Amino acid sequence: MPDICIHKSLIHLSVFAILPTEVLTVRSLSAVILLLFLTILSACGNGSGEDAADAAAFRDAFLAGELAWDDVLARAADEGEVEFFHWGGSEALNAWMESSARPAIEAFDISLNLRRSDTADAVNLILADDASGRGLGQGTVDLVWINGENFRILRDRGLLFGSFAPRLPNARYFFLDPDDLRSNVNLFDFGTPTDGAEMPWAAFQFIFRIDTARIAADEAPVSFAELEGWMRDNPGRFSYVAPPHYIGTTFVQTLMYEMNPDGTTFEPFLADPADGDPAELARLMEPAFDWLRRVEPFVLGGGGEDGRPGQPIYPATASALQSRFVSGEVDFDMEFGVYDVDRDIRSGLYPQTVQNIIFPETGMITDKSFLAIPSNAPNPAAALVAVNALSSPESHLSKLVEIGYAPGLDVPLLDAAMQDRFAAAAPDLRGVRAADLAAREAPNVNAGLVDIIDAVWLEYIAERSRRAFADIVEEAWRSAVE
Image (cartoon, rainbow, N blue to C red; front, top):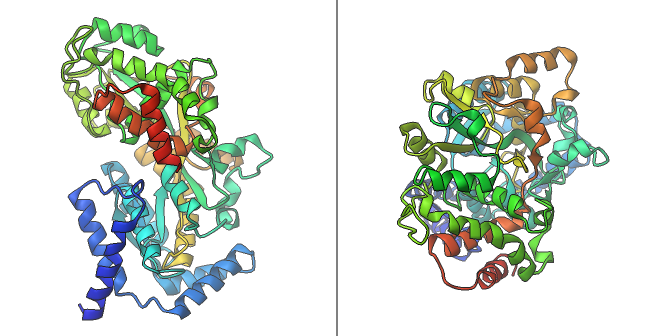
């Protein structure tokens, strides 16, 4: 490597020391190695002012609707590659990326470089590029699978390509009209307006599952009050994923909705916490966290009776909880994905007796994940073509069939023949009905609340702090909003 590249890479890496602490969360040695490799690689790019000017001209012309799609295709082929950063925690997804996503994108003479990465690490890399002066057309990340607080971070820092989604040819398969209520799930991401800066890619609903060989379906709890009673009768047979893993955070959010002391479920949690009062937020959150403390003795590893918390075990990942469910240590599993049970039964991971359940009756969080393009994407045209390819009905259909991901597009906008194909291809919901799931859809919390929930859980539950709950919430609130 030339000396100048070494010098530039050291400067590039040094920016991690000055990134905001709320986004600098490298969670594993493999993530560190990935970031080191890619930042050193990116430091050796040409990064000229001419590149930035050219990228700016292309972006402005595309967003203004001044380019024909054929012009975008031609530029994408010239760029020749796209750097796609995506969560790689599912072997089924990784296999689909190779078998379906790769040929769909490479059909346009674009090499697909798949980078399996925690989303927060990809966001950190985009921030590092920006902090080291790598502007339009000079970054490292072309495309990222994203939602929630990670999207909000890039949006708030002006690091997104712009309102590209409505300009794509396949945008016609998505509800994007702000006057149509059906568009809300596409136009808001954890309460943050998407402003067309990301394209919906997959829909997910948070769902619990049981093994009916252990729990009869008609005896499964339907509320957190019933779940507490079940846990007291069956100590050590339940656990949940520890926040800040998103499955654990979603579990706590779901509990907050049911335990809302005003009975308005999710409504107060959709507002940006920066616009609210920490004391009021603490009042709304406290019943849920009191429940978490109260049941702690009856969680896996707990002491088994009131006053004896023991050493409760909260698995660090969804796969770790699933492993304990499969091995018979716990009797409930939870995940985003209503079709996962069918897939896992067919793969042999689950026995035929595993099924989904409606829990809780008050609402099951539903959201979408998205594809976003950073403002400094090195191959912006290739990224646009890749997003459009992954937004086709054929791509969403294959994702549904092969890995059980509910489509991110809106099926009512497809022609009748394609709608029939989606209906025929949908996996078995295993124990629940689509109408019952739809009737219990609940939105996710505002993205600004996620870090607060995680911080409060870590102190109040994991660390068993004796501080007043309101004080814990206020400190977490100030850290998140100031």
